Figure 1 (cartoon, rainbow, N blue to C red):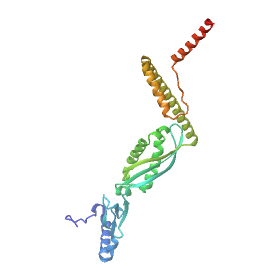
Figure 2 (cartoon, rainbow, N blue to C red):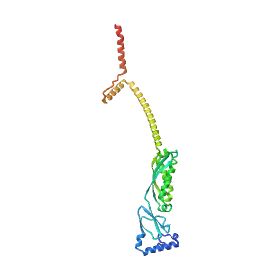
Figure 3 (cartoon, one colour):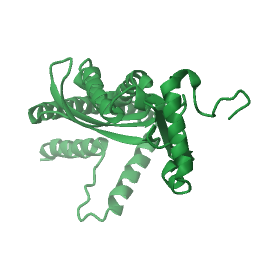
Figure 4 (cartoon, one colour):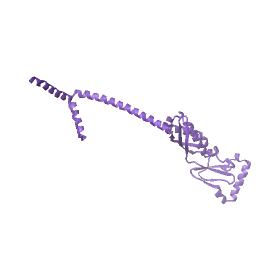
Length: 282
């Protein structure tokens, strides 16, 4: 008893006269059957567990007990153990109709834990089942407002919005949602083929554009190179010798030896002059 004459852990306003009588009888039974009764009244609560004790149907304290040893009186006390570890909730594939009228199947995972054992026991019948069903409906509701492209591109943002909605809805149940992950998005096979064809056409168009830009840049570079080589014939000869050296290092059996056009014109001019002079001498 404390200094005011009240037993520790007992609320006088809640028990009433009948409650006090039953409490006294239960306490008397413990004293009579001591020390055998002590083994039945002492309960061990693990580090990751908490115990919510009901005395005559009422929660004994606003805060759960544990970890360690707790005292449970016979006949009038009932306790419920609550696990505070993180729980993994796997959401089965949900068939969802997106905003752009595409049917898809999406599954996910929800990680949550109980932070208030009293709320988890007193405010909901089965906290884990309720959280599981709420996660399914929230997933369908959120994804139903998104298009397929938004679902495929913005998984992290969608998962964060689902986590926020779940955390707000389960606060009264003593649940804190730690993380939500979207595992897989399954789309029909025909839609996969059409998306693959669209992506391939986009890549081909992009490749053609890049090839055209490369040709344009190459033509500009060749034009600049021709202007530089036209100003210096010696540079043209050096480039010509460098090309021959590159061809020779590749161990080719045939080497094409180009001749300048001015040499061919000179040879053609000499033969033409000789052909004209021969009839005159005759």
